[in-house]
Amino acid sequence: MDFGVVLQTDPPATRLVDTMRQAEQLGFGYGWTFDSTVLWQEPFVIYSRILAATERLRVGPLVTNPGTRDWSVLASLFATLNDMYGNRTVCAIGRGDSALRVVGRKPESLATVGACMRAVKDLAEGRETQLNGVMVKIPWVRGGRLPMWMAAYGPRALKLVGEQADGFVLQCADPDIARWTIGTVRDAAKDAGRDPDTITICVSAPAYVSEDLAHAREQTRWFGGMVGNHVADLVTRYGADGPVPKALTDYIKGREGYDYSHHGRAGNPSTDFVPDEIVDRFCLLGPASAHRDRLAELAELGVDQFALYLMHDQPEQTLWAYGQDVIPALR
Image (tube, rainbow, N blue to C red):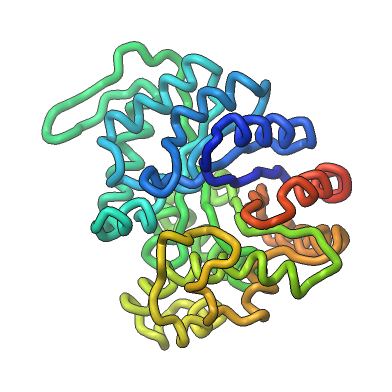
């Protein structure tokens, strides 16, 4: 199993670069960031510094969206970084949540996500593609490679992952939800004539290594609120009794709204509706042995990478514990 670390691009950027450098030294292979350019600093500027400060780390947004940047700009950003540092970027993409909603826009349609994935991948890898009714090609790309991963929860989105994406991002570490979503992706890949084993499976969730479960829960409860934004969209589309498992949808019954000014942060006041059971299922908490056990279970389901969020009060300790006590046992 590979490991990634997920950070927000809070200033100062130098601190984030230092954390990514330390993560590589501890055995992490991927460095991810949020991508909401009003809430945090522009990640692609910082990726250049991270790549310069590391040797093998692959970087990218977890996740970007089709609406923040023109697709030709998005492709050129990835292609430029790859040309400067070797093919060490990954594009993980979704419909858009905080990045679009904080500027008064709605998440993009799945059709738009699919078209964006094709266009950005083609351009970043040096192929011609159609944009705005004209054929476009980046002439200076040589040997570029951009894996295109997609985040998804609902049946239609999971189907698109299986049909088109190079990787699947599940933002939730619940084995039951992982089993259903991974199975849906693999079935869609088979139906599309693709080899399901070629799709990289990445689970991302907060991790907090501590014996104090009550404190760890309070530090990671924000994640249930963040996931709840996407679940609320699913319930609106499919209904409370639709095809999405109740293990994912039932807990948002008490949700009354969401304040993006606290997005992805410990102590988010918009997450009072998230019960302890959801925190325990969605996140990895407890001593290092509990993390190893859950990750082994996820690996049995076909998970190739675990990307851990470090938005809590013990990021350095958890990062170190993974490097010393978790990663060696799973790799």
